[in-house]
Length: 179
Image (cartoon, rainbow, N blue to C red; front, top):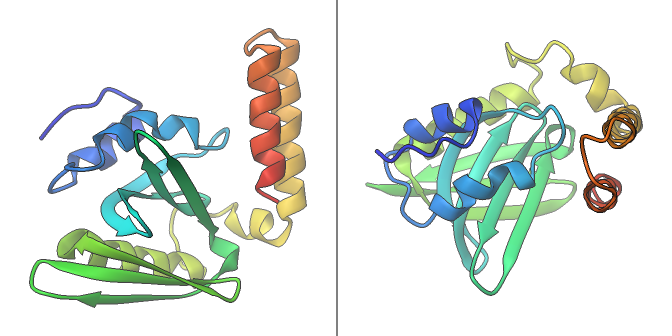
């Protein structure tokens, strides 16, 4: 299996993938779409819409990320907005269906072992039984508090000179767009 040397959490999740075909670029660029302090718990590959991309289960949300030559797609599903998860598997591949905020997203061609595990972990997370999320109910109950905290952290990073004004504007826009 390929090593990526992106970040320890991403590298550990990528090592568990049976194949990274069609997702290498997304794995390399995943930190660009993650929030401050967000960590990756599990990865899987799949097809959503027109793109073959990467599913990332983090400590805050499920993300589908496709980064093609001509286009890019990021769709996220915050756990407090997911009402149901469905898995249907074939011999090698399956479909993960996520019902969130009245919408239905079907991610197809997910390898069977990754898809089943991901569906089980998502069900556990949305039922409130996730072992690694003692702070999750507070942030799920108050997404505005989470946004305010992320904006405050961003302000501190800019004030400390850790990020440029351009990076500040880009990240601030992404945070506000997530509302």
